[in-house]
Image (cartoon, rainbow, N blue to C red; front, side, top):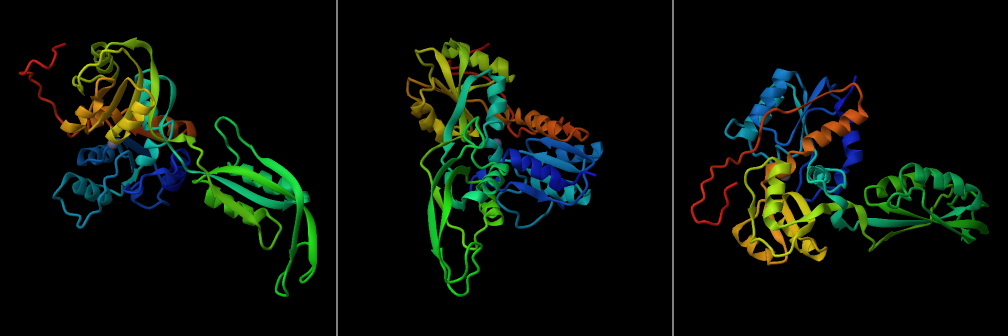
Length: 375
Ligand SMILES: [Zn+2]
């Protein structure tokens, strides 16, 4: 029988919680990790209607992008939709798991789902997370294969499309333990020189704790000499936003039409059209205005995000088209992405996407000032 913790472990290998932003509240929000799961419902938001759907569908786990408990709950009373959702879930023994900014910050998460809809190619992360470390340790020559293989087994030494990358240099280590020591080579109080290998491997911050545990478990010495260096190198697979290219350059007007067609939306709020054609497109699902500077630095012709304010549009200038496509509209694609991921990893697991449109924003459009265009 499948337990919540198996699903959570799998999701967290995809989008490690350590990637989540500090204000976030992702992970298991309601329920017991040892609870057995019959069926799961995937959604962007947890609303009362979504929990009701889970009850009807007999799904006892809801996997959501947005955390239903976010800023904390001082009481759980049926006064707001999110509180009613939590009450209903608990009453029906339905667990709720959130995979939020951690899924925003992997290269195959929220922004990949949006980039797929827009058919963007030559993709890269818009703002790379600079969380790379180098682990350097000194191992007796005969123990090198065991230590290095153990580190490789947990994913240390990964660089882009390469794994098991390391550097070895040979030398001599020396030590002399005091009377309380019990050295694995020589005796307490004896000065020793040992042929050692200096082993260097690259790590992401998410791997650092398990790499140090692995080193402890596999290195023969009582006191292990090692250095952990924080690097300036960027981690190209983790970070915020994404940038890619359209197959052909489009005018601002044609680009807006392209967005409407590919994203199935009626409304795009955007800055003034630009003279140059649009080829390089930066995106950030959800509220991503802070990444405008990165979009400009990376030569984007357009930046697509959500939750923009009036003054934000003035920052676009005439070299970039800034577009607000709506928060829900930019992110709901990830529902299928989560479903696909779990289907690949748990062949016989019953998964549903919500049929509830949880977008809290409704549109009522009538253009009066002449700035809008009718399709
Ligand atoms: Zn969001």
